[in-house]
Image (cartoon, rainbow, N blue to C red):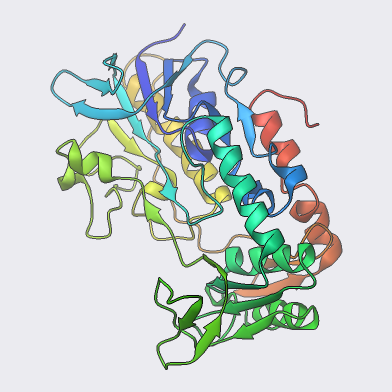
Length: 368
């Protein structure tokens, strides 16, 4: 028996996981502006290699057995009538609403447009630019910047590739100095110029980039891997700016409910929980929110469940591929230390397939 209408806005990792978890016990509607799931983990390689162009796109059609996926853009939330209005004019009633609209990533890790054809065309354009560029600049020395620099270097061994990072070490947000040293050693051994303490401002002047100290970097192509922006502008436009903090994240309580509301949750990159915004964390939030939504919908009777508090994950494995056969894995170990594992572990866990078989199975498809 399915009790209650649950509307999940956002079909990324957190939204898909939560919708699937609730599909058997509630009437679930998953809303996304894209017509397919976007496997963002594979997007950096897809922006470089033509044979990966289609890999990030997985249809939603096998995700839900009982619920449905509505392709459209949410434009308004009526908390009095408990309805979500889509740009198409459709109104979706809800007993529980979940905001899982994620964050916007810099190119090429972005789904451009709303259709597979539009996004694939964008990837093809990046591939062509990389294939013909003489000098490529990547800004940002976190996991995405390091991974993208490695992919470009392996695809273009003849081009000059520069990685500029504002910090004093690569991968400094992992908490492992050794990881940063290993990443820098691999990149430099493959001919990537690594510039640390090099804060870059967006924009260029005829192919010339300058950092905060005035140092010049020549490049005819640049990518900025310097962070993400929560996808919450639509909430501001819908009149719910009071749900957001100053950085644009949705403010949530310890149960992952929007502060001050019992029937609205926010999960994944979009909320203000202080922890790394990575896929395993989004999935963990979705699992806990699914439990708490069940508790809310079954707040009385013999199936009553007690809600749980979410505990931020501050120590989680971080996998950084250097192409399909190299990379490193930062693994937390007891005592507050971290271990840095090498190529074999990283290749098996992520680098070779970029977790595509696992994600395809989550969407109801075979691994291949």
